Image 1: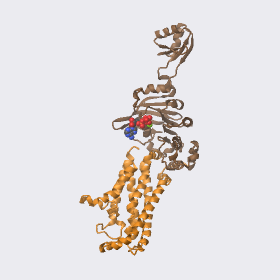
Image 2: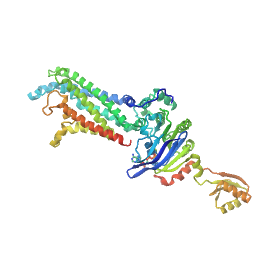
Image 3: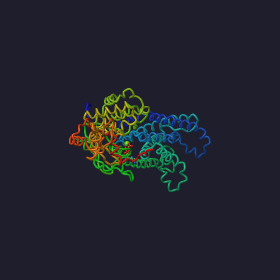
Image 4: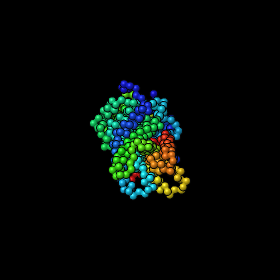
Length: 265
Length: 304
Ligand SMILES: Nc1ncnc2c1ncn2[C@@H]1O[C@H](COP(=O)(O)OP(=O)(O)OP(=O)(O)O)[C@@H](O)[C@H]1O
Ligand SMILES: [Mg+2]
């Protein structure tokens, strides 16, 4: 060996290598840029529409008016973009055959997937929190300009609700990675994610009533409860709903790890 | 010392047994050619050696260990199974850098392999724009990162121009000369004749031959012998009487098959015939290969 130091290949190295791979792709940065452009664009639109909504609101609607929730609701679209980021971390390697090269350099598959999950989740969490706080700080002044009730960061429940938005997005990134591993194809994983976060919630009313217990912990439905500050009688313990979704996602991730270890590449 | 050891390796896909009880070894310091018709199971065998596919039965070990148990794989094995296996959006440098870092190899190894493969000029370019030849070079560069003792290449000259083929051949030879074990699969028998020292031939997942290149061309194929004598007709009769098959060759020579050159010489001495030429015809590796795998061709074209 002509190398000075004996090479080692611990988890830190795997993590470092995955970070080089993630940051060396333009698509990573485009996706993140897209997250902020679209996410904050939606915030601006919904804030500007607040004045009219307030004027036409009934007394009951005014009582349940949630200025913080108006800012965090950008999560609805943001979760899809964060999902794309998570999916691509694995499916781009399957699509190009790079997964074979990656696992030849580091055959401990659990370690490789753990590094990918850790990294993508960290990126999604940081980006998600930044997005949520930015949405709050951009959205509230816009609404104040229209004489609509607004929230201040020091108001009760506001900080937890904004933080919950970032956590929610981080969890969706984990779900997306799990789907990417299980499906091994971008299109399949993305279609499944869209089905979970958009389609099922859109038609939730059509399902038999026993399904509502599941919907309490479903993305975009019950699991998004802690993103607001006005108590919802349906969800007395909103954090429980988000935690439930996280547990379900952990189960999907566990299945992904098992499949990743067992399958041929 | 055998470096790669394959023992009873078996792989099934559904009802099809793709690799069937395959055993062979690959030695250090030589190029081992891995030959077989399309679908013979070469790539599948290589994928099992490096742990990308799990065998149904049997083992494949490197220096006595399973690939998955190698602590720092890149310093022990460099494998290139698919030159296309690069993300097109990443630069050659970043691709190699990530691989090097995953095994704790210093950056200077990246520069070294870029230089050895002549890729310095395009290190900063995205792999998506690379030609097939450049991709092969990039893939080969990745295998050399850890200066491994074992190198595995699946059809490295596929789609290369003559100059590229020559470059790969010279590289294989020099890697073997450095004492490394090189296992290389190919469709090009003529190529193997110039590159490999040893050949492993498989057909339908089974071992057909495990032999030195020189052995294969000598023993296989009915080696004919060209003979030249003054009295052609007479000697032809004597040869036929002794059990050989004789036909007329070019420029009033005889082409004898079914009898070795040594036996022909004996026969001539016995009859007091003076031979002006006695030349065993070497069978080309191509012919020997066709001969060997005739029964195990999975997809054979119909001659028009
Ligand atoms: N993942 C898979 N699922 C099902 N069958 C497979 C799979 N991979 C390979 N096969 C089959 O196994 C057989 C051997 O394939 P393999 O790629 O190992 O052959 P090969 O010798 O490398 O052929 P070639 O020279 O064409 O590259 C083929 O019949 C192929 O169809
Ligand atoms: Mg092949």
